[in-house]
Length: 468
Image (cartoon, rainbow, N blue to C red):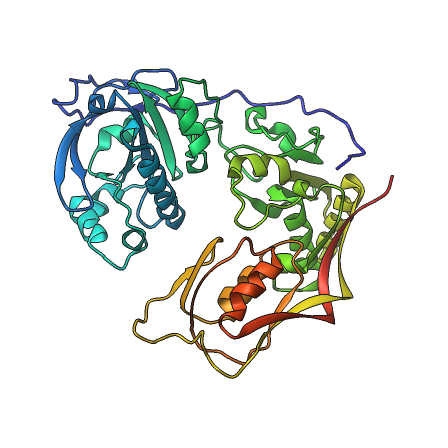
């Protein structure tokens, strides 16, 4: 991406942090004195905190200390049970725990008032016991054996956070990393165990506050951590801002009669589609298979479904910030959106638009009238594990499983279900990748299903890089 304005952002606010006071002192946890506290930082030693309630999956309650794990890498995963991404991450961590055995110890930590007032009371020992005894739960089905630390305020005060999953890495009693959960992988764990230095992005939920009404030029420069090749422009563009959720909107200053439109932390392609949907009153986002990228390097704009890339990395590469300030004349939503689309085109040297194109599509059809894929009906539980290579589907229809998954990959032809079957299916098969169409076809043929090519005229979203 290239830009036509090159005015560097010079104004920024001082870096602010907010301290916390430890008031809940556990006499058995090292006699920690009450003090003004901002949390334990990377490189600092962790006090020998008593983990008075460590709940195993089998219901056994143990009392342990941090120092019990000084001989291995200790990974504390702060979460809450309503966080589905956290639970999915626990399944991955269970695989790592089995792989590395006694060289590491992974624990889930719940019930922290530091990030969710009242959660300590709700997700207490009794609650987690009931949660773990649900044999049909996602964790039970995946045989997750990771223990749970419950009712421990002190840990949450030592490692304050607002967003979960919040992962603390402790090696030989020293904090070596505080990260998002995506960094807990085989490569990084092996590096720690080999005594290699790891330099992972620090998860910090207490960066200077950001108000969506504040122009980019007045915001703290510490948030701008993106590596996207965008310089910061006076009231025009900036790269990814660390620690800020996506925000899109407008503000009107009735005193100066000016209007400010802003996009904070949104992928380029999503920014285009959002504005086009507002401009044309389209109420849906196109599936990735209906997005055509006429660009040299698609990784600047998208991340593929099932990608193992760290969230932090692709956000830095693909997210942008935008704002414009101009006279308010009572513009309609459609007029404002059209103006933003033109700005994106001009400033990014791109052209984003909806088009109708005749193109190759894939049709899912039945090769015979048998229903080898029909659910047995023995259980009403829905199971939809669509991640290759091992795929398992129970009591989910074809449209919301096979067809949906194939349409989630950029570069795949659009897929349509013309089997005429609307009931739940039961299928279990292996495939190389959902982008390997021949592999998918081979798997489907065992169930009397197949994919065939047909040309159809359909509406797609097209993003093109303009030739310089």
